[in-house]
Image (cartoon, rainbow, N blue to C red; front, side):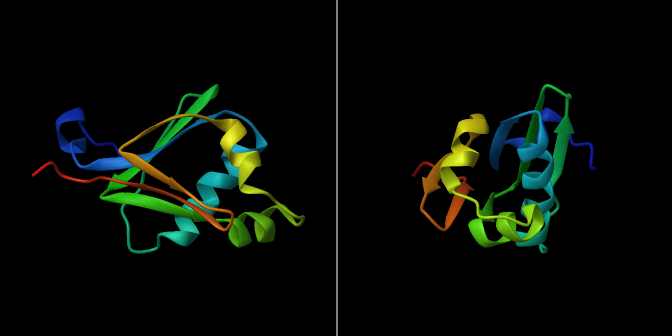
Length: 102
């Protein structure tokens, strides 16, 4: 886990997840799906904020592999209490990204 000050997070995007099994596995999946990113994980037990500069992606297949069972991205949506940046949802992945204003 990396500690980053608030002013350093102006271009960060990522999910805010309800604490529990799905969030624990989701953090691991996000780390696997974004190997080139320096990911900030703020674990507050009841919720987990996961962010990185420019954004993050999580793939359904990665969640299925880690859970050892079928997984629907809707299951992640149920545990998503918020997010920073913009969000793109798909049956196969969810992506959080930061788009600068022109």
